[in-house]
Length: 397
Image (cartoon, rainbow, N blue to C red; front, side, top):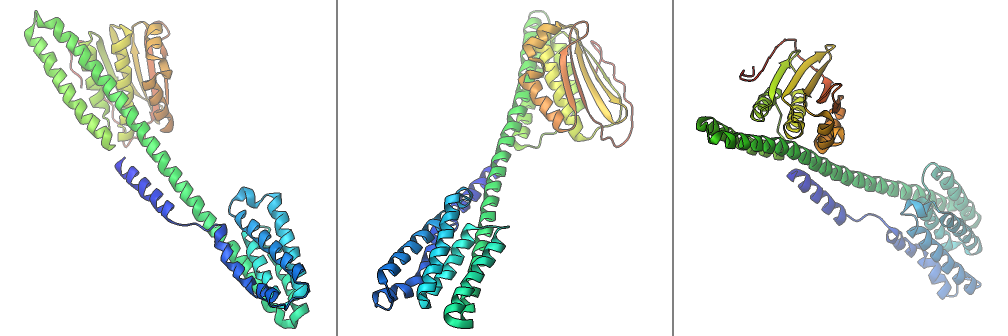
């Protein structure tokens, strides 16, 4: 989690420090119109009031289009497109009327067009603007006016390319921040699930063994001492598992969870019966089944009031493994208290198994008791068969 916070913080700070293009980026290019502005003040333009009004209109439309071209919603709005068309008409009118320095408004029109138009409309629109600039410029300056046409076309395409690249970078930044946010959320969810499963089972075992130690303290001090030793061992193991869960390196062992389940069931005066057969499993599958055993047995100890609990791990068709935890307690009451699959622990396990291609079902048994069934892909490396029978007073393995 630390590296996620560090990466996320660094990225966000970098993004805030970097400046993206905006409407102000296109304003300095208005200096290209200083020649026309100079002609007005020097009296070199006929009908200067009309020229001044045209210059003011051009600048206003250019600024309007420029600032609305950096957001997709405003760029594609009808008002922006209408303003761009009016900008083109004003440019043509001023260039046709005065020529000379006024022809430099065509490259500015190209800048505004490149900012406001994107593919696939960019190519035909850029061609139209370039041809229009070339026609008006040739009309005034002869073939030398083709330079204005080329400058207009280049300004259109280069502006569109730069701004498109800027938008792509901005979208990548947004996607990266979203991925970082989701990674943090998934890490928090993983940790909360692990902590729930770890502490729920461990605290249940500690409570059950404490009750057993209290019952035995008066008549069998040695047995009570053994239960207290188990409580100490469970507490130390819980500390280790919590540290591993925090660092994200915890890999559960099905055999270890089965041993722990047998110990917890015996302490709760529930007879454990464990049967295991089938192929060896990869660590990921063993870890998931270990979580199921831990959660199911915790619910049995807490809610079932059962006298016996049977845990069966067996291959299903050679490609999948099935784990079944069955008790003979009060099935309906057990389902209500544990929340069946809707409970916090079983719900989290259902999501984990679904992600791994498995399924989890839980509910009252056909006759009595409660049944939790989990199926997962085997992903086995070989085939061995191990049969374990555990009853009261007999060891696991």
